[in-house]
Image (tube, rainbow, N blue to C red; front, side, top):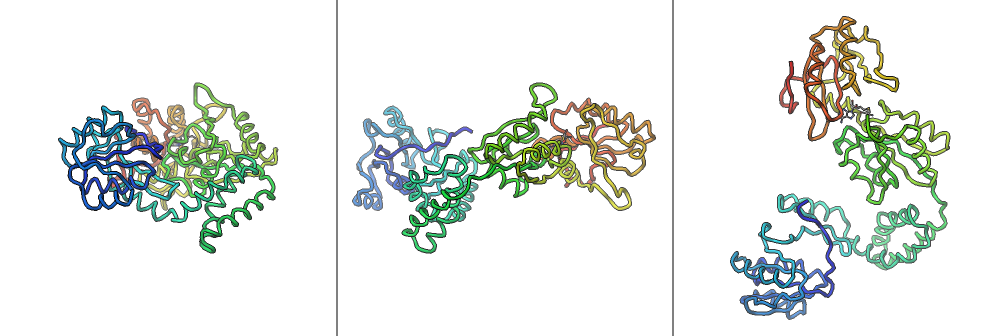
Amino acid sequence: MKHFPIFLAVEGRRIVLSGGGDAAMAKLRLLMKTEAHLTVIAADIADDIHKWASQGKLRIIERAMEPGDALCAALFYAANEDDAEDARVSAIANAEGALFNIVDNLADSQFITPAIVDRDPVTVAIGTEGAAPVLARAIKADLEERLPTSLGILARIGKSFRHAVEVLPMGRKRRDFWSSFYFNAGPKAIAEAGETGVIPALEMLLDNHIMADTKEGHVDLVGAGPGDPELLTLKARNALDKADIVIHDRLVTGEILELARREAIIIDAGKTGFGPSMKQEDIDALIVQHALDGHHVVRLKAGDPTVFGRLDEEIEALEAADVSYRIIPGITAASAAVANIGQSLTKRGRNSAVRLITGHDTKGYADHDWAALAQPGEVAAIYMGKKSARFIQGRLLMHGADPATPVTIIENVSRADQQIIATTLAELEPTLTQADLQGPAITFYGLAPRDAASQIENIREFA
Ligand code: SAH
């Protein structure tokens, strides 16, 4: 982030603008929405600006800017559409302590003005650091459409009602109240009775909430998918949106955690191979405890929670404590990975079964039916197969598997740094050692990437 977004308190403060033409007017239209005292300084000032001055919206000084004109100003805009003049006036403003912006000159400005969606007091600011104004406009248009115009009214009335709502206990109950006001009772009241209907609706809603029983805690056991936030299910997104507590494992990406409700407490229960790790019993206890405290807990697991996710242990702990829970499936690493090499997990005439196997379990390298897997046409997706690669390779070859059987390793599936490595069983080791993968990887035994280059990016050929 090269620019840090903030909301500046400008009520009663000075904002000075130098310039009197089109660029000045465009900025002034925005600035007049604020409660700041506006001063426009220019030798030549457009009629519209004069009109605004006569309406008391701003003050005019009709001459070129001079030292002293920006004293005590919080912000300064140079909008002369003349580089030399803009440089001169912003140097004055800078010396006088105002933060300055030169219109259409990102590089020399101390701040930039975002695209704004105005539902005062709700304001959305959109910035792209100057990189993509078109994108900012598209996002703005999208939000304008999505945020009802009544939102501003609701927020204003809601603010005046905040004190009354303090009878509800802080946290979940209060949040539930406000969320049904903004998204349900409030818009409905405005639609039916206009602004005057809002306060009675608020009072009725508050009564209902005071009477309602305290809600019990609940746990959603949620699949986060392989990493790309777009591979989350809508159910998972909704659960994250409502979470009080998010307990996630190591492979869940930051991009996904960012989707959690802003007030949610995020707990990393990551079980790294080395370093600090949390024992499964401790994780079980943590989930149960937060739910018993009345929270909505989202237990976020990479991929699908039902695949090598130790889900059953957590369910047993929840059932023992009589906590309600729900399982929200996710896209498992194998599904996302096979899609990214343009293949199917099963294929008529090749394999009518596919195995999801793990390279190791709690007891060490995991044993499987190697003789069956060694048969031609078999396909297996191997999870946690990096360290155990040599063991798996040895077992399969020993049971007569063809050394030329294709093997594909996909690291960081669905993420920006995804890497696909095509090799064979004979070359699995040393290929893996050579590749020195740092991220999570899934290995397909019996599958090669489809040749169509259009399907695949970043294939590294080994062997
Ligand atoms: N529940 C998860 C699997 C957890 S076991 C799922 O359904 O995907 C952890 C293993 O999953 C990792 O060692 C790796 O083999 C695989 N894995 C998970 N996310 C991955 C990703 N983004 N890319 C590659 N492999 C991944």
